[in-house]
Image (cartoon, rainbow, N blue to C red):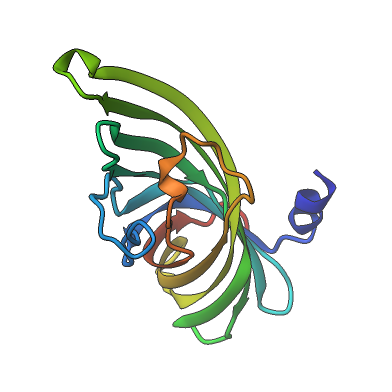
Length: 203
């Protein structure tokens, strides 16, 4: 609360809004082998930017996306189909530096904690048709990414329109849940394109 409260106390402008966009990079394969992806590339959620002195600002987002993958493990008479789906919420906290002109380019750097919660559905095949079993297991995990990005902020009146690119370098848990099939060869490098739309409520 103290960390978030300090920028608010110095705020020159507060701009709440929404952001949406796409992940331009897809999922990696399973240790180099292509596998079906259950992920969706969209990102969407609320955001707020707090303007600070010296052309600085702090931006905080809460972006939702859906992630997942399907894997087939072909052991002899002991085969598995695994399909994982997860709801992912990412919370980037970014420090922005904005150049002075009206057509404001900006650069940003920060960290993006993420929480995933989902279900893995498993079909197990044995020697006989009667050996086929179905099971489901819920799981959750937390990870984070370092973020580097930039864009342009347009300010027609109190409206703020900001297209931007972000590069994220993910750091995954050392011991993810066994049911979190998403982490089997999950991509560590991600590129996003986003559009933020906000309304300045304090100047």
